[in-house]
Image (cartoon, rainbow, N blue to C red; front, side, top):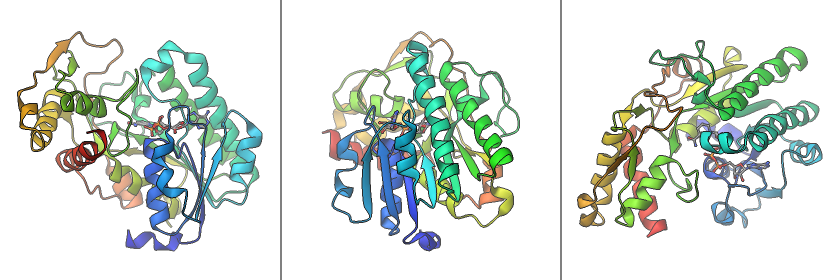
Length: 330
Ligand SMILES: NC(=O)c1ccc[n+]([C@@H]2O[C@H](COP(=O)([O-])OP(=O)(O)OC[C@H]3O[C@@H](n4cnc5c(N)ncnc54)[C@H](O)[C@@H]3O)[C@@H](O)[C@H]2O)c1
């Protein structure tokens, strides 16, 4: 992280900082002696994710909701940069309750843009999503070519991109959107109805329960370890390349792994801790409606404009994530 030392003493607001990705961003920024403000309403984030930071004089917690413009104004005041992560994730959650997903992900996003504009922050970096590729089937996904969104969640994330682009052209606010592809790693929540596949399967394996794969397991994803995502955010804040601003970037590895390969990897690394896990069976259920068969990113644009260099492939990421879950779930 040597090249990011220029961030020392800068002020960065991380919204959703008590969540999975946000807390990892807070940690990386605090390691660089950045003055970090975390804004979170703990809707899906957890206090233990940020407990270690509370004693750090460089860390400030604002408990509040991005649906409240005044809260956003207070949080953005005097900030140099914003890393906007707060949102309600999960496609199924948005299908069950599109109104709340829209209120947080669209109206809350707009509040944050307005607040960032009015506070004159230097850059507004935000969590976009691979779901924006929707029904477009071509692989690998390149930023310029998207399909129709397949869920309310995907619509909210696409609207974010439209607003961000418009806030640059209309108000001159510099933005960068990072289209995250299936992020995983330490502190991703394994609990709840909308848990992501990797932490859910890890928890099930640890408890000797059979994970259920939707379909035959041939569906594939560009699973992206959290350290690669942290790197992209730091590059987005620090890049001196003017051409790199006001763009969206795939934030991924550029490699895909099927669900069967994923469960094999999880078993391999978890059974080092508990050999019985190697014997846990996988169960197959029906395909989930709206699931696309394959997802794979081109990361050429990020490499070209941001000098992105992913440090973790799937196997190394899974190994590190499993070590963390074993320590923290067992
Ligand atoms: N994890 C992934 O694979 C992935 C993929 C694509 C995009 N994203 C996006 O990345 C961002 C972070 O996701 P995550 O995986 O860390 O999820 P997360 O649920 O762990 O984190 C989201 C955080 O936002 C907070 N939040 C939610 N509503 C809020 C509100 N109204 N006001 C203030 N805070 C609020 C939550 O409490 C939580 O701490 C989200 O915008 C998500 O849509 C994640």
